[in-house]
Image 1 (cartoon, one colour):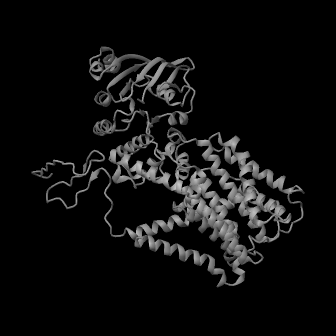
Image 2: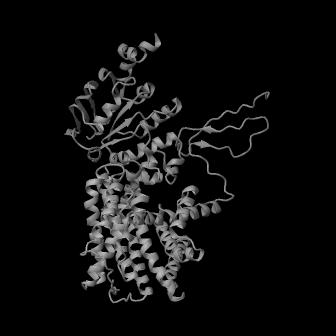
Image 3: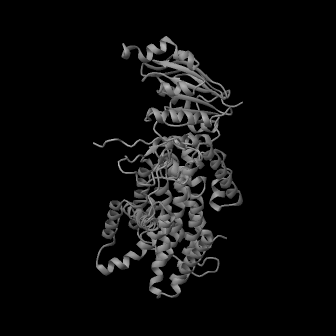
Length: 255
Length: 362
C-alpha cells in the first residue's frame, strides 16, 4: 500500500519564533486527513516543510517509509508527493490538456533526443500520456474543457484542473494547500463533493485548510493546530465536540 | 486520409515548392536576401525557444552568431567539409552556452541576462579582436559545398540555408509538441509548480539555452559564407543582440512560424527601408513599438487573431463552462436567469428548476 506520510517531531523556528513545534502527524494509506487551525497556527509553514520549500529546524518527514527530509520539491514529487497551491498555479500559456499532460512528466516514456526526432518511441510516449490524461479528465469531469485555455475557466474549475494535474502524476499522497481559499461556501462544498468522488483507496490526501465545514465534511481524521502545536486529533465527530477546538476558533470572537 | 488532412498536406507541399522554387523565377539580386532570411530565421527560431518559450533573455546572441562566423571561417579555411563544420560549430555553441549557463541558471531571475551581457561585451571587445580569432583584417570565408551541392551562387547558399533551417524547424516543432516543450512553458509560468510535478527545472532551462546557442552559432557559419568575409567585432556587439531579439518579437515570438516570418521580414527590410531613406534601426524601433502596443504576438499573432475572428464571425459566443446560458428570451415580465451549476456536471444529470414570474414589477 502506497500513501503513508509521516511527520515526526517536525519543528520550524523563524528567528526565535516557533512556527511549528514538534508536530507529529500521520496520513495512512487511502485516508483523507485534514489539518486545520486558525490564522497563524503554522499550517502553511508545516506544508512548506513537508513539500520541501523550506527546511525544517528539526524533525523528519517520511513518505512510505523513506526519509525525504532533505530532498528537493521535485525529488519528493518523483517519490509520489503531489501538491496543489493556495493560489492556483496553472500554466497559463497552455491548454487544459497540456497542463494535464505535464502531470505525466514523470511517466513520459521518451527523452529529449527521441522527442526531437519524433521516433516511434516518442510517438508511443505521447499516445500513452494522452490516453492517461483523457481518463483522468473523464474522472474529474474535465473532458468538456480539455482544449480550453486555462485562463478562460471559472475559478472553481481551474482548481479542479490543478487537482487533476496532480492526480495525473499518480501520487501516493496528495497535499492540498487551502483549496477553498477564494471560494464561496457553495463552491467549497462542491469542491468537497468532487474530491470525495475522485478519491479512491490507492492514494491518500492531506488537506491543509482554513475552511472548517469543508474539512469536517470530507476528512476521515482531523488534526487541529494552534500556535504551532497540536491541540486535538480525531474524527470529524470528535473535533466538532472538542472544547479546546471551539475555544481556539471561536473563543475570543464569539464572547 | 481525411479531407482536412489532405488539404493541410497539400498546403505544406505548396509552401515547400514555393520556398525552393522562387529563386528560379526571381532575378539573381533577390537571392542574397533569401539566403539572409534563412540565417535570420535560424536566429529568430533560437530566440523563440529561449525567450518565447522559456522566458529567458540573452544579450549574447550576437556574440554566438559571431562565434559561428569566426570559428566557421577557420574550419572551412582548414579544409573541413561544410557537413562537418555545421554540427561542429553547433556543438561549440552549445558547449560555450553550458559554460555560461550552468553557473547562472541555477539561480533565478535575471542572472542569465547579466551573464550573457558580460559574454557579449567580452566577445566584442576582447575575444573577437584576438589575432587568433579574427585579427584586425577581414578574412575571406570560402563558400564550401554541402555534400557536393555548390554554394558559390547566392541561390545555392539559400537552398543550403533552407535545408538547415528546415531541419531546425522540424526538431524545434517536434520538441514543442512533446513533453520537453510543455516543460519549457511550465517553468516559464511557474518554476514551483513545475518542480511540484517532478520537473527538474535547471536542466530544462540549460537545455533550452544550449539548443538556442547551437542554432545561432550554426546560423553564423552561413552568415559568414553569405558575406564571404568576416565582419568586424562591432557587428556582434550587445546592441546587435537587441536587434536580433527584434526578429522574433516582430514575427511572433510564441511560435515557430513567427521565427520564419520575422527572419524573412527583416532580411528583406533593408532594401525596402533604403527606398524610403530610413535607417533600419529606426524602422525596427517603430515595428517593435507597434507590436508592443497592439498586444498581439507579432505578425503571426495578428494574422491568427484575424483568421479566428473571420472564422467565428456569426457564431454565437461560446457558453462559459459551468454556467447554463438560456437559449430563448424569457417570457414577458420574467427576469432572465443565469444558473451557475457546480463545475463539471456529468451529461445526463437531472436538474429540477422552478421558475417564478414576479407578480408586479417595480
